[in-house]
Length: 336
Image (cartoon, rainbow, N blue to C red):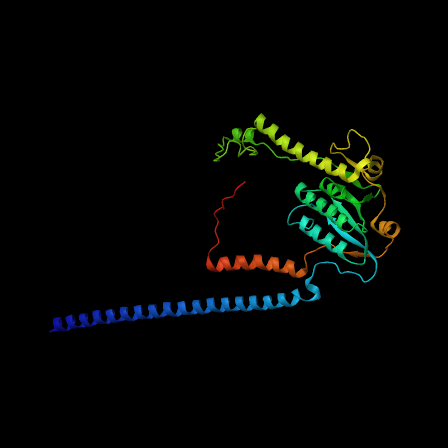
């Protein structure tokens, strides 16, 4: 009888254990469900805050866009003035001294009915020959469209290479006696690492379609015919530069063997060589040559709103990619 009671007690214990296991599974399932619900609520809250913030910033941007603070361009004066356009820094696309920015500024300066003359104030070591050529051509066009308004280039610390290319389109060029002027030349530089790879025992693997597609690859030996070809490209671009300077300066240029050699000159030397027309500053040109001492800045600059929007767009893009887990670490293929 005791054996029967022991067996019955053992059976009851197994049933209790089974019930406990089922209860534990039920609680675990409930816990997972609650955790998932909490995570979903947090996710919904984050997206709600994100879209509310986005809506607020959109409305703020729309308000600033149509307000006086939304513009990055200089304002027009209500009386005769000298219009000033800044050419500062490297001349390149998407930079402050891009052709788009400079052309926009120059058009506004010439178009203003109170403009008596335009000063292109230059402080630049040069840059893209393409961007410089765009601005050069636009200055020539504007001078033809507005024959009564002269454009004077005034060089501050430096007006070299592409910056001088642009200056050559002006009616007259002025600089300080210590300004650096000229550098009428073209350059392209790089490095060669072939010997370094050999010493390190590294094998370079390049896949390309086109016999000369990789002729500028610094990890491959330079070929004589490719070097000669690249030099012809530079020579052609240099000749374009020389032709535009001659067209702009005409017989004011001195007959000097090193004039187009790429050398840079001081303002005093540049005056003797005919690269500039005199020694003067922006204020003295406005006062003594143009005859309108008051200056108005027409330089196109990104407004605080534009800069903020650009930074905001980059930040939001990264945030959205992170939320959606779409960011990729794989390099994108490019055509070079």
